[in-house]
Length: 66
Image (tube, rainbow, N blue to C red; front, side, top):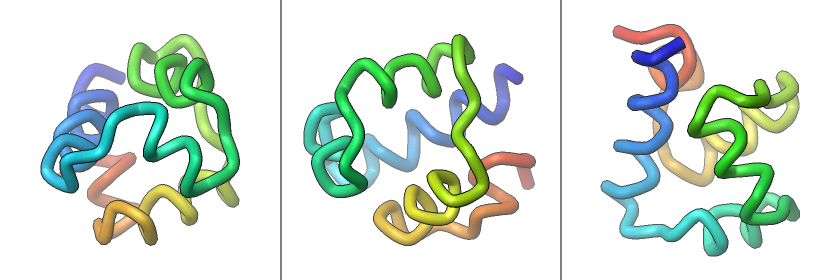
């Protein structure tokens, strides 16, 4: 879980997005993004695909590691 969490955090930071800004782009609250990044919750497949698109990352690398 740790690697996936760090991949998401690092991808968001590379795009210079706050949790709030990322959430706004995929219609999710900041708390949802925070929960994904801390491992408290897991995004649905649809949410994962949206995240990958917004962050311009491969969904497999973003969530499964490299």
